[in-house]
Amino acid sequence: MNSLSRIPPSLAEQPPHGNSLSYDRFENVLGKLYEEGSQEVRTCVVQATLEHLFEQKDIRKFFSDWQKDEVLKVAFGEASEWYKGGGRTPLERP
Image (cartoon, rainbow, N blue to C red):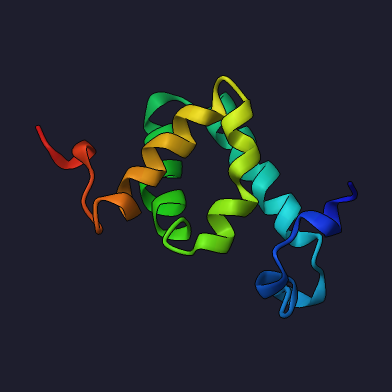
């Protein structure tokens, strides 16, 4: 499967800045930031970016391959709690 076939049709219709490969690059950059980042960086990736992206079903599907990675599946799970909780996560609780 090439990278273009992974992009959900609703996302591929209007790629950012005219290049649908930007989605793959964005996913890769976020993945690297999470994998190589400190706990603070990981929290930022999840709470400031993924939680809000995952409000869109097509984007959750696009990132679903993260569930197969031992490190990234943690980020996927934490970010998914946001939409499952209707905009609230256990991360907000002390």
